[in-house]
Amino acid sequence: MNINGKRCIDLKEERSVPVHILTGFLGSGKTTLLTRALDYYKLSGRKPAVLMNELGDVNLDGMLVDEDVPMTEMLGGCICCTIRGDLGMELKQLIEEHRPDVVFVECTGAANPIEMLDGVTDASLLTKVELKSVITVVDAAQLSERSHSPVGKTFRLMQDQIRCATRILLNKTDLVPPAELVRLDTLIRELNPAAPILPTVRCEIELSLFDRLEGGVAERHQAASACGCGHEHAEGGACGTGGHDHDHEHGSDAHHHSHEHVMVYTHYFARPVDSERFEALIGRLPQEIYRAKGILRFTDTVSPFLFQYAYREMDFVKIAPKEELPSVAVFIGEHFDRSSLAAELAALEGR
Image 1 (cartoon, rainbow, N blue to C red):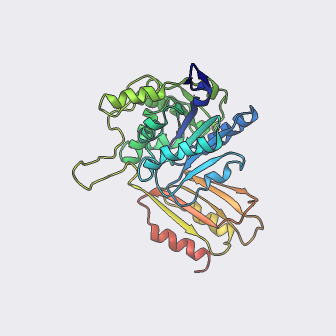
Image 2: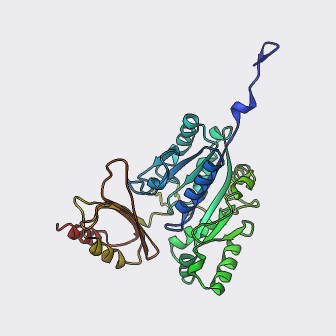
Image 3: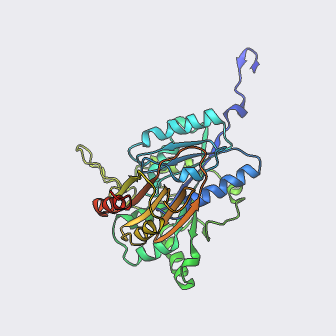
């Protein structure tokens, strides 16, 4: 519109789109929370969108998202590192193309949310995006086991994911004794004194939480960056000293990432395999493999199956894809024997 010959900007055209970051270690339940949140927004007549990241070259979790939800996939790397520079542009394009009412950013469990905060709060996007929350989903059983031997990069990464949260879902509480839950609550509170902790089973929460979440995360993170330490100090998510654990060495070629110790192996199947033999293989996976997922065709079934494996538990779901999908399995873990695993998978096909 014009007033006295001057152009005035309609504030409605410049409205900010709320963004929620979903983080948490591999297999914690992030995608379960995401699908619940997407259903909630759609039922209330709003349009959600998703930016999803996977370390591997196949986005299997994305197949659980309904086709009517706009989704951008960032594959083959971690948002916080190799493809971090594209995050701002991908968000901008997603918003301009689909005009969503909300965007959920779900990153791989090997990503450090401190770096993701930088990506989402890129200065060029602040006029259109408002970061509303960083929700960390914590696998209670996995945190319990790793906290008894609190060493290694994986445990430090889990600590950073907790420190940076504005809300924490302590998930899978049905798998941990009550006394241990009390200890975990204390441990989490030591890492993050401000963020509310919500005990959950299968990430079941009152989804109106998203409506009540207050803004200000971007401003707090911006202020923290200005102080020079790179960590958030304000209420709602304090990132502790130790930070993103990238150990950049300026003036050299060294560039170590917080998930450098995480390995990804993707195996494509040329033919259907025996379901019982595959289940047996998954059942004897070493502890170094935290997560596995894939789409498989079995010799003794007609429909393809989506399988998920996390923390020594496996699940198979029959699917009816609308397009031809590859038979593939993705394994994520820490320093596991990739060649041995590849040989066992090839043996299932008689190779």
